[in-house]
Length: 280
Image (cartoon, rainbow, N blue to C red):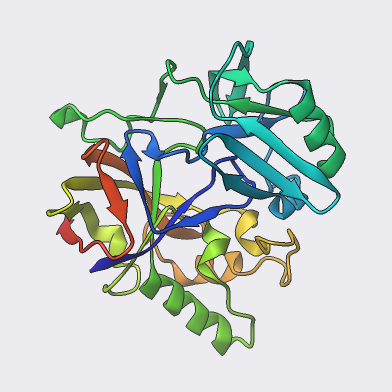
């Protein structure tokens, strides 16, 4: 089995960036969900409520985060932190600290997305703990993350997408690309939905291990095109995933597995890396 895609989403719910190689951190791939859009109350905002976020392109240079939209000039946010004020933000039930990126970023987001919004950054000295319900606490496992919904990594499989698309095609429906699911690590060389039985993925030569800890329940974002924000076929592929029962015993639509870093912080991960599966 090997890695076929690596993706980061520097700003939660904006467009992603495909990479050939990057660094692993305990909080995920470097710069993944490092920034987030919030409303005036500090509550996180995603494509669930603002599908137009999919139209904001994202780039990283050596010095800056760059946001682009056809309506206006790019927004350039320096990577180096200065004296940004701290604020409290909310992701689901979590309240955590963030650094406010200022009025220029707020005006830019408000102009292109049509709502009063702000851009915040995850502070390097803050820790947002991953829920312990699915960690191996008896082994002393713990993990933290930045602004993902709950876990630092999302792993998905090419074979699972193929199986889903075959079911969609059999119903006369449009197939969907992997980008709908916004994974970090995509692998090939396995059976469809076999990832539900995996405990670890190990890259022996590269020196890292990922622990797969919780199935990823999907929301309406997977119905939306990740370039336009439009939903070509309402409720699909959500409805088909529910019917496929990809995660027996769990109610809802599931695709991919949430994961944590077990070993290898600071090491490189790359497309083509061979992986060994350790099952539960």
